[in-house]
Amino acid sequence: MNENTYDVIIVGGGAAGLNAALVLTRARRRVLVVDAGAPRNRFAAHMHGFLTRDGFSPLELLELGRAEVRGYLGEILAGRAVSATGEAGGFEVTVELAEAATAGTSGTTGGTSGATSGGTSGGTATFTARRLVIASGLRDELPTIPGLAEQWGTGAVACPYCDGWEARDLRLGVIATGPMSIHQATLIRQWSADVTFVGPLTDDLDPAVREGLEARGVRILATDVSSILSDADGTLTGVALADGTTVDLDRLFVGPRLLANDELLRQLGAETAEGPMGAWTASDFTGLTSVPGVWVAGNSGNAGALVVVAAGMGAMAGAALNADLVAADTREAVEAARAVASTE
Image (cartoon, rainbow, N blue to C red; front, side, top):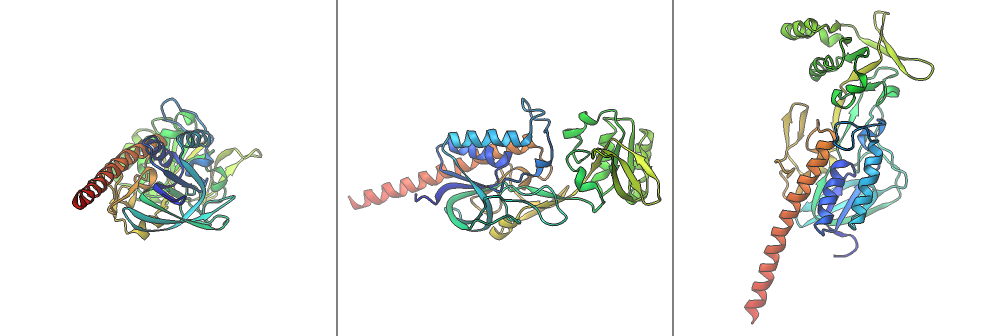
């Protein structure tokens, strides 16, 4: 292999990408991780539900992960993969190198981890690989409510399993942004008896759903949220409604629109399938997509994956991919041995 040729290129240096890299480097594969350095959960000070790492800073987790991967001779490149072409055995990935990559476009938060989107270019470079793992994840598009973006990751959050315990027994609000908000409001009641479900979409609740929410004490307000309120220190205090009233709250749960960072997968021709959160890249249980030699892991394969799940998906993809390379290595060795034998 030359210096720009790898067994595997992994696009995305979050928990999924790094865990795939860890498995593959320990299998003595030459691995390049392309990472834009802007993980979706960078707005949160802590992550939860990850055994032995509960309460860790997500950025600290990634720092430790990068050190582990480098310890097994894996390479990590700061930049954004902007194109991918080829087929199993000969993929080509072009990377926009960046000294200070920044993620996201106007109206979005969350960002990417190695995928194409924005950024400060330091030139481009092209790399080749026998196999690919796309772990570039997704980004969150928030409702356009004044003050919401400033609270994202602190006063306003998305996942009850990530932030519910910290919000227990507080005054909680859920903004109705889509069908998944019903599920969110139903779950949130588990952590507090003081829950307000607000937004015009609540007007269209199924009668049985409404009855269930109200029976558990959830207040339902079919009014638009006009702004998010906070005090002088920037702490969330509630929401202002379109009818001029306000609701005092301590924490707000919001379901953003999930946008896949799947540009490379679309370039490669990967198929999608409909799921609970919309059309997403289709894959088998190991993360193998419809494109031979291309795996997905983390939020690239499962929009609802928590950090610990994403890491597990990376490990699964890495192990399956290595087995695929072993099979290819065996075929090549057999062919080479037969060629030698035929000349003797």
